Image 1 (cartoon, rainbow, N blue to C red):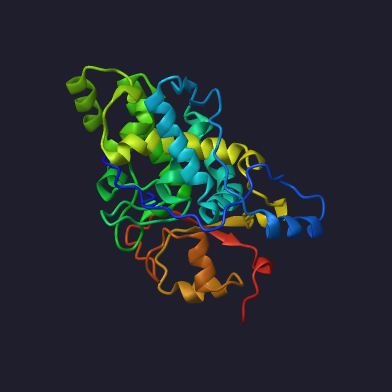
Image 2 (image 1 turned 135 degrees about the horizontal axis):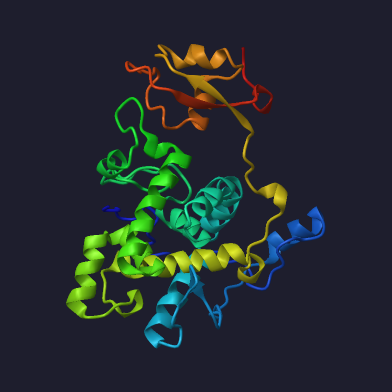
Amino acid sequence: MKIVKNVLAVVGLFVIGAISINALQDAPTDENYEKKTANDYNVYAIKIPDYLEFAGEKVPLQNPDISERMDKELLVNTYWQSNGLLMFKRAEKYFPIIEPILERNGIPDDFKYLAVIESGLTNAKSPAGASGFWQIMKATGKENGLEVNSNVDERYHLEKATEVACKYLKKSKERFNSWTLAAAAYNAGNAGVSKRLKSQNVNSYYDLLLGEETGRYVFRIVALKEILSHPAKYGFNFRNKDLYQAIPTYKVLVDTAVTDFSKFAKNYGINYKILKIHNPWLREKQLNNASGKSYYLDIPDAGYYEVNP
């Protein structure tokens, strides 16, 4: 599977206002919280943790090259504060969906951070056509059982796309016997990683000389894992109420064509926009469904939204 250039790659980041590395995550009162946000404008060097690992595989930080590359990703992702806060907010909403699918498929929990660096936990689309949280190419999606066309594109279906990502990662792990190399292969492809391992006569990601994107890839995953796991340590201040929450939904079976989703949505007390927010894999205003396939749409309780009649 050829995974495309990451939509969140950072080029030339300039920090204007940085938050304090020693700030507390949860201020006890709103008043104290507001004071902190008004006064914490300091930039600090970041101490690299003594031990870091990805999916149970140690990062060899004693190697000065590895240490410097890890330092870079910790700095870049700590002081890109707006993006960092968005990752905390979205993770609260989407990790509970991703985590049980990874566990069910025997994929280490750390791979949820791969989705973070691939798409920023959004239904992004890359210039090369990779789409969804897991940035899956059209051909790859079809090969793994997803429906991908102009009417329905299940690469935007988070649960189904996560299943496809798990299939690919398991195959890569079987091939390389390393979760770290499996992660790198998600970016560069199994063939690409195999070719480089053979040509350079090494067997570890950390010993490979790679291009900019794949060379940073695992370090970015580890950095996001470290930061998102320890917000206060890296100066991110927020309260639980600042995080995004999932809206409860229920499933509605559709096994016929739908000529107008605007009218369909009104039957459930919502509008077309809200229907699309919860079902982004529906790509057009109608569902063709000439074969009578069964689809399950997520419908939110109308009480969560203010919808004009």
